[in-house]
Image 1 (cartoon, one colour):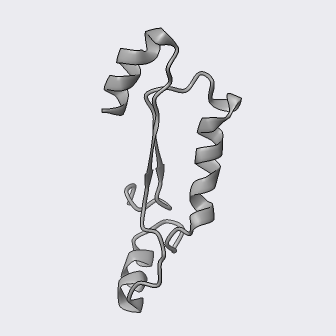
Image 2: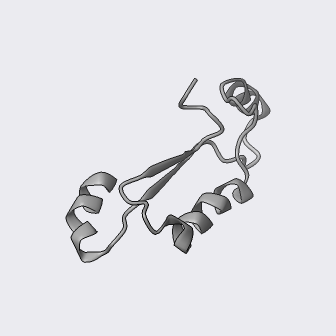
Length: 80
């Protein structure tokens, strides 16, 4: 959907991107957290600060030529 909207609205100078966060630590059951952590390259769940960087990047002029992108912020969970 991100790429579709990027292609549809790009001619109007509208950039469309998305962020796909992984597991966000919110005091879940310790067993769940342990299993989740074993599946990520970084060995931990995200916290709220981990999402800020990509959001700031996409909201800034540093991403002026970025559209149709989905930024995975999952500590490598999907890649494994």
